[in-house]
Length: 174
Image (tube, rainbow, N blue to C red; front, top):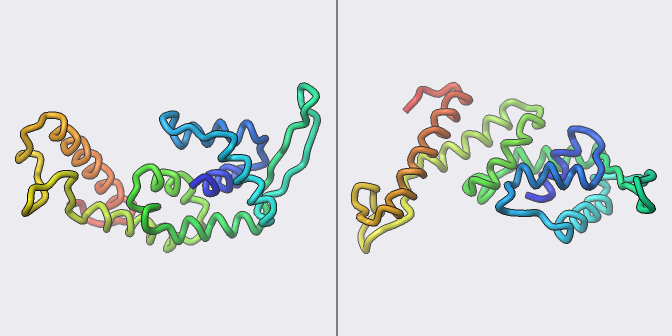
């Protein structure tokens, strides 16, 4: 997802590394900080792959500022990553939100809708965080108030997201 965020934010225009890192931290959430040891090697890999270019310009001190820019190959790479999102990019909420943040960059509406349909299919598959030996437990079957809280929160979030997805896909509400 680091690569998707780098490419996605660079699709908005050239950026300095520190500005890119700030935007990525905001999107990723401050509970999951992104270190320099993660972002800069990823940027360097994208430069080597021809997805991103960089040029230096004078900074406020002795250190030059790196300005990064998305290439056409980088845009194609980003669009492919977004329209082919599956697996944990669909099932993990944090990863899906990153896909969703840049999904409007995918030019074909059918491709965007396919990603949303995959997420909806996942959300409509019954699951539970807790089970006994025979079946998944519903919130009403859980005595522990904190575990029950997990399910109540997850159910409300799931319901709201499914309603939004139905609206985006022009499907009748369930």
